[in-house]
Length: 321
Image 1: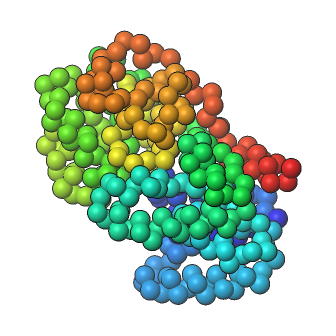
Image 2: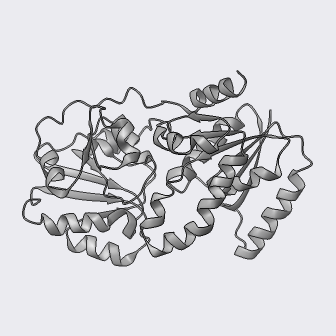
Image 3: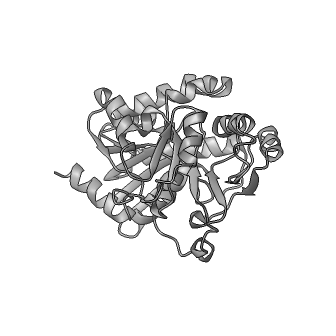
């Protein structure tokens, strides 16, 4: 098959939806002819203006190519309206509209990004959601929808095989350091300073906001930086304090390594609230109760896809049924 994949960033040096798209493209390339059209990538080192000019020049040229499928992710899915004669597929990794209300910056960005995502949903032939919550939220404006949970590919990582120290309560947090993801963690650490003395917090992620990093360090959080292989198995729990997410890849990565996960009580997590090993807290008191609970033993990760190949097979079976 001849496939065009349109994305903002094509890279394996990022997290979240970017790395998921990268892995889907890599898998599709093994059996198909795949053309990648991106604004940013790991190879081209050109200016912002030139990258956009090059992107739209290549986009124009793609209209005359005999592609069997055109894939999109991110807000560039709005370009689906330019491919009315092609089979268009949009992978939705976003977390709108919740993201609008996390900061002034995201509210301003959302004024144009959120409508572009909605346009993509309306004009794409197939919308692939990575979370059943968002499928239910947007199904009324979509033509065809399918839920494909993000796969977790087990990595050969010697550090993750190290046995955790059961005498310590070590907590792992994953995600780039900014206010959206960690301002609530700072409040939690301030609130429970004495109660949390027996816990150790390690954070893996790039520093986006140095002020947030400084505050986290003041409360004793160990900043580990960005790493390609995260040693979940060394930890007792994986936690999140983010104000807005879709379904973090780190959640499934931790569960796949049988690490209990503790997340804020938000609607996007409700489809998984009854899964063993996944706990939701409504406030800091409940969060603390979960941390001190002795029942965090068994983790159910049987529903997490183990390969991109299986997901792609499910996708094309759905399209061609």
